[in-house]
Amino acid sequence: MKQTTEHDYHERILRVLLHIQRSLDQALSLDELASISYFSPYHFHRIFKGMVGESVMQHVRRLRLERAAIRLLHTQQSVTQIAFDAGYEALEAFSRSFRTMFGTSPSRYRADRRKARPPEVASGIHFSPEQSIDQFSPQTEGGRSMDVRVEHLKPRRVAFLRHVGPYGDVGKAWEKLMAWAGPRGLLGPTAACFGICHDDPDVTPADKIRYDACLPVGPDFEAEGEVGVQEIAGGDYAITRHVGPYENLTDTYGGLCGKWLPNSGREIRDAPPFEAYLNNPQTTAPEDLLTDIHVPIK
Image (tube, rainbow, N blue to C red; front, side, top):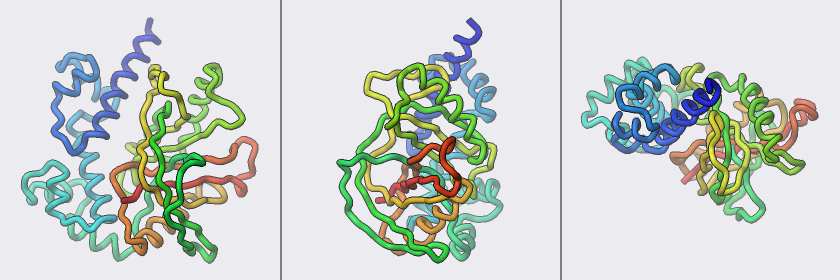
């Protein structure tokens, strides 16, 4: 009974977290979120804070401000428009909240960070053979050629286990997901593995970073406790292949987002980047690991 209740609580709160991250442009009320979780509004607030580590409104405010920081760095939107999109009716209120979180004004943050190397974005996804190649562009990173292509991807339904914390610690999430997936027949010689990295480690505190370890599932699959279901968004992605240890992925992200993207005429859109892991780290030497990085663009 205890394990069933714990799984049920995880599933219900995870449903709320997914709704929040899909609905940051909308007004979000406690009553609405409580109804999604099937908890009473009074208990929902306390359950959410106890399981997530911050209140509902703190969580929503932080995600909106972190998204605003990403837009300041990677888009040409005005600070005023970014403030409105973050749910602020006055630029002054946005600037105060932004300064509290990042220690500087939005305009200064944009100027200072763009002078330096633009921050790496984290994340990834998998693509299928029917996707069409729209663009190909060579790039150089660390003295070697970086091949970047743009492909239009179809949406992909996945089961996932969420890890909250530094990206370097995601191994336990994968171990748990694989142990869960094996008996359910989701693992095979051609099974695809995706990692969705929702947060930029240069923007989000390490203990708040969200990473989803994912496996593809069919339309009839339903969430089970900590294992949720979501759809990886379709659309255009800039894709490049990283060869080598996962610890060095940030260097490849830097080349893709900090060098190729500013010269591409494209901008990052509001969907998380993702990674497709093309070989098994249990049987492959670190220097031979292959990871396709996908960054969503418009």
